[in-house]
Image 1 (cartoon, rainbow over the protein chains, first blue to last red):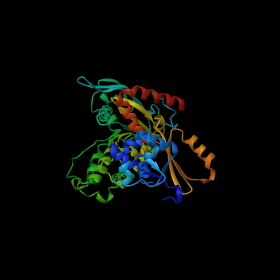
Image 2: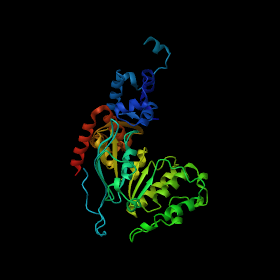
Image 3: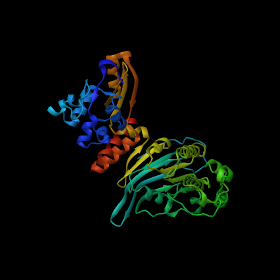
Image 4: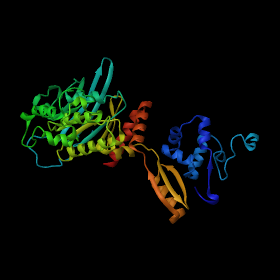
Length: 83
Length: 324
């Protein structure tokens, strides 16, 4: 979507699936509309810094676990296995 | 308690009252169960009121008491100036009722049935209100012109519902009760029905009390929304008043340098002000989305079910006083 170094990658969908949390639950917890979770997960929208921190806090992980400026390594790759 | 405002139309026949509905502390008990535990509200002439609430909240019971179909346990009820428990034919002729399901008259043809039912209302015509409604005009108003000669048993679900509405208004009621009127309507039929409701309230000053589970519909149609939960009115106000009642967060969306952002905040105005201070003209596609009536309704009902309904009611009353 965005060009150059502005892209923000996220693992919201993965965390959600892993924790068994619905989009609706996440939307209610952070105060956005249901569809917005989809926009965030697909990278159509970037969260404000404050919203990003609240999403991370909701999952109880550091923000860099959810968001990154480089694509996250695929599950099952070497980087992921050694982590 | 809602305070009656000045009549909108000054010239009235002597003795008419603008309070079409006035219900105080209405109670209904079945055995040991309080279905209605003190319902209080009023409606002015020409007002459209939507009664919302979860299944089993007492919506249909309330309407049946106001229609005179069910005797209440306690409370003062005035419907068109009379107690529905003692309302006579003259009074009943001024009411219109559309029940949740009304499947009968299968062999009658649409136009004949409406002409027949309408004839019962002829003795109750007044100078101001000719009764019944002209059949062809009525058939047209509910969008059944193409089906006027059909037997009612041959109508589709949506067409049958339009006929139910036509039966409810054939006597040109001054007060109309609609119990889930648009169940089974397609979007176009729904829109046409909304136009009809607006026409009845705006042109004929018909007072309308409707129940619905479609919150979008309630928001579009109703001047005022009542939320019934646990046998009490837990909220009473316009859709806008209700959405400001619950402190749900607003969502702010914008774009900057081609990238789209989203934020949620209780203070959207303050956030946007700060956004412009920081980024000025780089901010584009600004959008602020507040809680919908559905969000508010769900929050209200959840709050009530969590046993904090008194807090919800008080917050609402404080809000109203603040607005006044």
